[in-house]
Length: 274
Length: 323
Image (cartoon, rainbow over all chains, first blue to last red; front, side, top):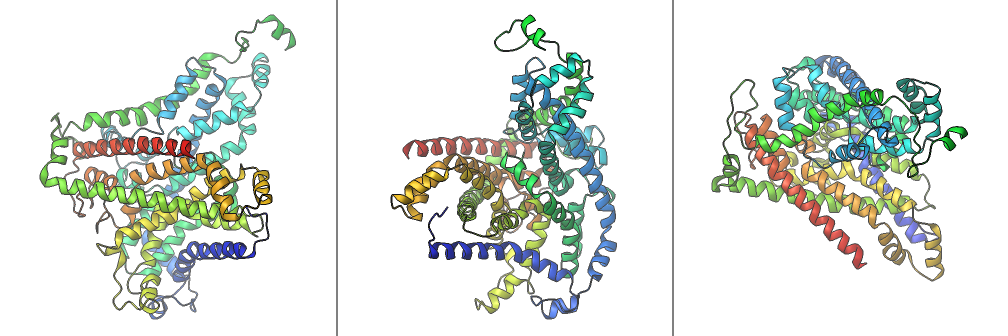
């Protein structure tokens, strides 16, 4: 905030930035460094820079932990849950924004309640159990899908900025509702949809609590659950653990590099945790 | 269009014109609405009902209404220690996380909005990254950092601080909990920071310029201008951090599984309902997935979250008025 060229203050700022860069990059760097070491080198010199540069740990971790299978599951869960959630949220937020249905305000309030109500995990578990969907992929996806209050909130706000005249023109021309929403509104609301979509993807990909609750057999595990089980099995083999960690983190880091702007936008609008 | 506007009389600013078929609009709302009712609202509301039963998580077992027995069991003397420990630990977790996380986030937000600083967006991106990485990755990283005797923290304590026998932090009854708190703060600091940055960017430059012309220093400018004008962002962040830290147990679950004096109330509820350690405050487990009992515990948790949220809101309102 400084308008003055206050040198000690500037030095203080850079020192803080550097300290925090260290605190945030060191764990990542150490993990990566460990993941490319041989076990012998790690045990001899755990903190030194790697000399061996081996990728054998990644190969071993991949083969031992069925990471391929976990990744496929996670991709399936993430894709379907995100798409379904987005679709449902869009089709609810649009009429609410336009007051096209009776009781739009009440609907809005209803979804807002979701922010404050307790999660209801136990009854939800009983429902899934009664439906016979425990430890099944559809059951897990049914739980992970959902219209979140934040996305309804975010979308209605965005839709209100799209002129209403377009709806009227389209309706008078006899345009089909779904066609209109997907060919006109969705392209116009693309930034909002991408933001919410990425936040939802990250949420599903990183889920560990629900996958622990609802999935019990290895063939259904998502990637985070797979990682947890894997690190439990090879808890003292740190080079292997580090490699497993990066197999899980790599897609997240790549997504983050490319979509940072959208993610931060979404969070600023009150996203992620909903 | 023009014809229509004149033809249809305006009622309270709402133009009455033909739009899309209402049944079609309604039909499109239904899937989301039904899903929301079935998998969000109804489960949420029936937690209270299940808290009066002895329902179990094992499939096909019968259950009965047992009145207030679950609550009685939770509050009776022999479990009071568990309850008290868990509540106390939850309070420590929430308070330390809320205060430290927000203080650091505010500090870094102020630093990163300083226009003289080069590469601000890069720093922001780095500090925010753990939010994206998620609990499983962060927990694995923490285990790696705190491993004995090859982890960097162990080596640091041994060689730099000169500790002769550094503890195995994550399996120590005194240090595991602070380490988990540190993980929670490390992961979420960037999240609060981004909200603060958004708030700071809304404060007009001119205010500062006027203050500096009048001879104000950085420190004065912060306390007299930034802090009061940022109050709404501070309120939002405090609220998010309190609610988040009271309920969240992902990192506790993934780092210590609720052992070594780390089980908060949220962890206890999870462990009681779905098995695993942390069901008692000392990190033990209960047999049989007692979900009725866990539902009662989660009602207690919900009640404390509500109380704390309302109290903190009142407090922050009052502080705003006082300023």
